[in-house]
Amino acid sequence: MTRPLSASLPVFPWDTLADVTATARAHPDGIVDLSVGTPVDPVAPVIREALSAASSAPGYPTTAGTARLRESMVAALDRRYGITGLGPDAVLPVIGTKELIAWLPTLLALGADDTVVVPELAYPTYDVGARLAGAQVVRADSLTQLGPRNPRLVFLNSPSNPTGAVLGVDHLRKVVDWARERGALVASDECYLGLSWEAEPVSVLHPSVSDGDHTGLLAVHSLSKTSSLAGYRAGFVAGDPAVVAELLAVRKHAGMMVPTPVQAAMVAALDDDAHEAEQRARYARRRDVLLRALRDAGLTVDHSEAGLYLWATRGEPCRDTLAWFAQRGILVAPGEFYGPRGDYHVRVALTATDERIDAAVARLAA
Ligand SMILES: Cc1ncc(COP(=O)(O)O)c(C=O)c1O
Image 1 (cartoon, rainbow, N blue to C red):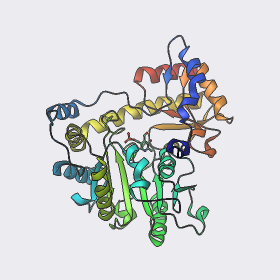
Image 2: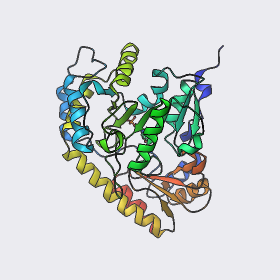
Image 3: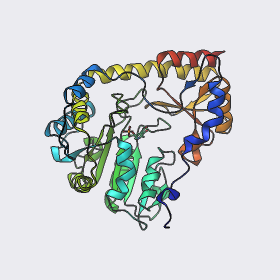
């Protein structure tokens, strides 16, 4: 038998948390799970109504999405993030952005001779996507680290999962210039762009970065966090129309279509900014109280200017910090999941109910 594809993938890291999970679960007032970034707040009625109204959908959806959805994606990127100059052929819905990220190198026909650059501390799916395509992976945050390499694809993620760091306009411009000189595609994962607290994250497509030219650029946008639609599987890519056309051409054949009711729900989510502002306010409050509680408990919180996570350290190996939290009934994620430079940090997610966040704050103060 040929080598199974799964053999080229890392161990699914969450499976290694069984012991600390059991410890945290034993807390008399129950576990506070801040380990994964899975949204917990109800989906906004305006979105649920749109899903329900579109639920009689006997026919196949199109891979490109409805004209109405493409219009909404373009309008929301303009209104929310100041991204101008996108036409309806520059956007494409995806079945959640994890799917797109995991298959992007394959869809672009990358292979063993190709290199994919991922941030040093990163959402693991960038690495997984490169491995699925059999491509090589280089972890680097600065261009000088790359030397004379000519990568085919560079992943950026600002605000970052896990660190909450935000890349400034100057940094983004440098990466874009550098990639264009080398013919590399820049895929900017902007999952957390709408969740900023102490910094102003900017899209790679914003005119201040791109000068209005989207050649070689893709922005990846998820509705999972900003609209709490992780369960719907709803995201999209936007950018270079030639790259979008190529993705569409392959995805059509592969059956990568967003279900019709979800497309209708995406329209409702993209057209309505009120529910997004409400969700953002919930996370802002949770962040405020947790940040203070972590600092009062003696932890140092690094970066964390934006996004859904606090990147904290007690100056010890992350598994020791995990145990320290678990004794208080709190589960957090070890920094080592995100790259070797995360060995001394843990990632604390803001995605728990107000009641559970307040329980964590009380336990940290005890
Ligand atoms: C940085 C980043 N990108 C992409 C995703 C995937 O989001 P989804 O597949 O729900 O759109 C996540 C999810 O946690 C993430 O943290």
